[in-house]
Each structure stands twice: as structure tokens, then as C-alpha cells.
Image (cartoon, rainbow, N blue to C red; front, top):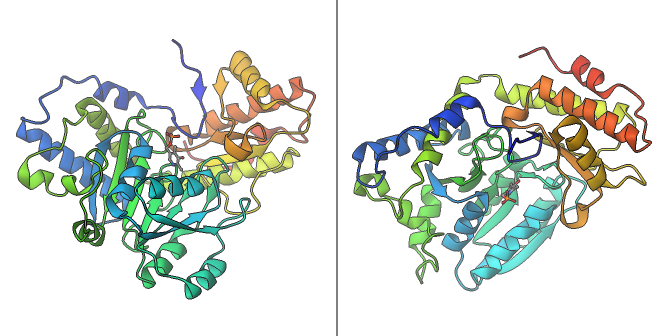
Length: 381
Ligand SMILES: *Cc1c(COP(=O)(O)O)cnc(C)c1O
């Protein structure tokens, strides 16, 4: 099967050196002691771009595993958990909390706007009796970036542990785990990190580990139990056989990120330039603020069937972009300009093919989107 260009907000394009690394000959990752060092080194490299001294673990499962594992490991029956919600993933955390018998309290924001930090502060001044709070860094279905640099320290000031879903932001947006007081942050291999899907990346503070140890009852899961990963290195024991080829590939992807000194700047410039091109074209961005630099949600013009538009793009230009789901189904299309997709050649071709495809459905842009994008984006390779 020949894949189209996947300009989606994950999975993203995978660089050749990552694909080749995945084909290396494997050792036995449980019994070959060298692999424990390789795993640890990979975690430590990830910690560098998370800006943290906290422990990092790589779990065998897509990003959802990390979200569930955080909730499974922290939640005990009756624990009050604050679920900060201004999007589909934000709301989705509630399902995991309930699965593990926690009591969900929502803080609901406007779904077109980033979480209002002042409103949240007012809310917390009235009620801050929560074991932990969940918040999404970038809520991908709407391309909503929340200001976790303000939100997490505020929660911690109230003694609330912080759990952040940064699956579609980690590696593409600034993330300062220690400075921002994030107890648990979850990422995935297939978004900005640009390795194939299959791995969760999770950093866990000592305080979060302590909360897991202080539980009255044991964690009601094995696969989602973060505590069993605490001392894997000292004990030379993994809870289950690690997917070695996935991790070797991830290491190559992480090395790519660490070598790429301009990576965040590039994401910012590309994100901003896409938004300018979209607006000048006479299209509407879905959000009113809180624009993500990793994914842009564009409203589908009246009368155009989003799935037909996307099919036309694949059939005629070999570019795959995304629709959305939940309440956004059929209303927006999304371009993922994260990780390996955050390249001006790919993004400009995507905008060109979107424009041509819109024309096929009788929507005429007010500018040449690719040109407008290229004019704005700073010059880098
Ligand atoms: C991609 C993503 C996940 C993982 O979900 P999948 O739909 O299984 O890929 C979790 N949270 C966010 C914000 C994501 O973008």
C-alpha cells in the first residue's frame, strides 16, 4: 500500500532514519542488560525536551494508554477529580476517572476559546478540594492550545496534583514540566515526535508516585499501573516485554528532535503563517483564540461536504488531511503541521491542494494560500 502524504494531526510523517532504526536486529529486551541502559537513556533524552528531572517512562500502547494509566494509578473510590474541559479530549478524561470510581467535577470552558485562567482561579477559590486535576495541552479535534504554564502552577498552589494530556503538543510546543509544576504529562509517539503509533510517553513526579503509594487500596489494573514501573532500572525488570523495535525507532525520533534546535520556533512560524493564509483566503478558523501551532482547524464552507473534499484531495493531490469528530464532525477540516509535517514545502503543498480542491466544489479563495503562507513563514529549511 502506497501511503499518501499524511498531513494529519497524528500520525505524522516518519523520517527515514526512524524507519530504518526500527528494522535493526533485536536483542532480548528483558534479559539483555544493555537494553535497560538503552531504555533509560531514551527516557532521559525525552526528559530533556520536557525540561524535567522527573522520571520518564515509555509504555507499550498508544497515547490513550498513558491517559488511562494516569487516572487508574491516581484515582481511588470517591476521590474528587477536577476535569478541565474545553474540548473532546478534555471532556474524555472524565470517562477514565469514572472507570476507576472517582468523582468527576467539571470546570467547563468555552469550546472555541482557551481555558480562561481568571475564571478557573475564581472557581478554585470556591472549591479546591481535589486530589488531582486533568487538563489538555492541545485539544486536537479543535486545535485548541491551553495555557498550562499558568493553569498547572495555580492548581499546585491549591495542593492539587496535575495531569496533562500533551499528546499532540509534546515536541512541538513549549513544555516545561518542572517550571510549570506538572505531575504527570502524557505524550504519544505518533504526533509531534514523528515515530509510528504505538507508544505512550509519560513523565511522573515523585509526588505523583507518593500519591500512588499512599493509596488505601491497590491500583485496579496491571497494564495501567504506573507504580510497577518505578524501579525497573534498579530491579532490572520490566513489567512486560518492551516493544524493542518501537523503542529503537523512538530513540531515533527523539535524537532528531534534540538535534533540531529551531524546532519550536519552526512550529510557531508555520502555525502562524497557516492561520494568516487561511484567514486571507476568506476561510474561517474554528477557534477564537488559543491557537495551536501543531494543528489548525478550519471551518468547512457552507454547502461543502467535508468528507468529499478530503477524498478529492487524496485522489487528486495525494494529500490526506483530517476531518474531526464528536460535535465537530463534518464542521471542520484539520491540517496537522507538527513534527515531520512542520516543513514549509509540505505545508504549502497541502494549502495549494486544499485550495484547488475547494475550487472543485465552487469555493474560491481570496488569495493564493500557498504563496501567502510562504511569504509569511520565516526562511528556514
Ligand atoms: C492523539 C491524541 C490522543 C491519543 O488518541 P488517539 O485518538 O488514539 O490517537 C490523546 N490525546 C490527544 C489530545 C490527542 O491528540
